[in-house]
Length: 463
Ligand SMILES: [Zn+2]
Image (cartoon, rainbow, N blue to C red; front, top):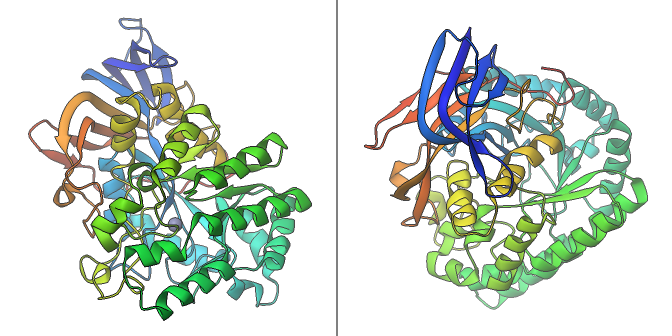
């Protein structure tokens, strides 16, 4: 069946939009047409002049399923994604049980999440110190990559017993393996020794507030870890990706490494673009993340880096704790670190980026769709509005004004440091491979497709 979407606009370079129509067939974009062009279709949908973007791809989410489903699960996580114009997520390997570190654990996870997904999904595999301690880890990693995980996650600093961090030597072994396998490695880059030392010092003096937590994870910790990653990229030729980059100084290092032609990229997150240490003092644990928000100078540097291409992409690092219990344990040190973000990422970047002139519309599409698709190895089928690619669409009402309310989100534990922010631009519909999965109207009415509507998308496998 062919579906014709008419009365819409698409990005046309820079901040331009042009009137267009889309012809969808068999889940793909069959053609991007001028208005009124000759083409037959069995179904016609009028989008009322809306702006159509390629669906956002959130390459860094923690949907916690199976294992920590009191925090999130794949049904609620992908529902929130759909409501936010995100058509594909890539879920981290470390926050489900068992962690995804070999084909068996991958299959176990797929069996659980497959019936629940409302949008397409990819999966990170992981290498933890736990895995390196076991026999045959390299062989298991190779099988995992062959099975189609999108990338490999490692930590230079992890708080999880079930997914322990690597030292530089262990990471070198992993990068030597992934360089051979041709898969990128996402690195949580904070220096373990420095953070341990500063945490001990802060706790010894009785510090127990946002300022103390922030002091335990300074920009210097990120800088040292990024230096470690760059040295290992240079030594091994591996491709690495710094997840949730927070500081301007670390971005300077990434830029220099890219000028050196090392295979390094980086993402930042909405919370590092929206918030600073002063906000953390005001909001408390609600904004606790790792790394932690930095200064206003860092925030402004990240925006500039996104605009000029030094920073390649934005991901939400969606990680919700049980609300309010896990965010109010009585101590900043034990409160859960993480914020839900998959649903607000695209609206936030559209409103605070495009509407405020910090990002062009063209750049927005690159940082939330095209670049994530390339990182995950699916640029041939996702991330652009182009004939032949998956018909994954985010349909925006550019002028809609609304106020962010946690109660209006769709993930399981609803809180957000963006509470009360006024946004301009709202997701009205989300389409995954030619099928509408979410629609919302001006009056708050909502409709969702019935899961499963999303499919597992494997790296390196043709559609
Ligand atoms: Zn994360």
